Image (cartoon, rainbow, N blue to C red; front, top):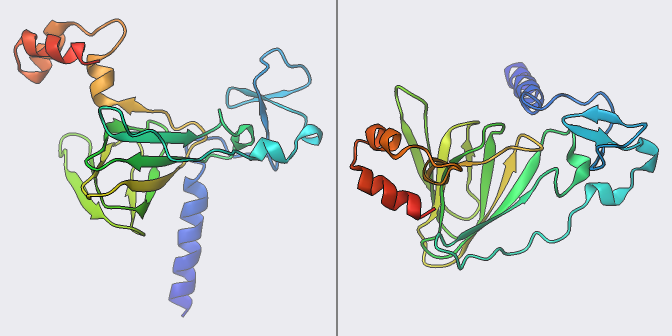
Length: 219
């Protein structure tokens, strides 16, 4: 019994310390952001000015509209993010979330979150998910998830979700940052502005420059 008790304490300690590993720990109850960079009398935290706590209200911690996204695009998926840009009260709290909608065969393509670990729960449907570890192993961890299943994507690692079911799929993700960031691999590599040199990409991917030019046109 004592062993289980201490194990629980250790897990809670890890969870509490990890939650703020990449966002500064708050030194007050909350620090509601305001978008006015010329604000006076505020405190500048996490790149945001904070309003006077006495002026905060329930709407600073509220978002309405986490509805089904449009999955009619070429990827057949939609991601609705609720971060500090949607809820200003998230500033300094080190957390955000996203709703993911998938049409049948819909894909959330390989991407990374440079500032957040992601934990995903499937609400409806069946998803094939996975992530790849860093060099030199490049090890793939993958799983097929059904309704009620949960999967974790470690911070900074490339990961994806694919609807392998015959019906729509829905998932919710929690992210360990108020602003997790997003790097979509294909879009960033082949759709950068200005474009990365075709010579660089052709050599990196060991393909003809014509293939690189074709891929760049897709983005």
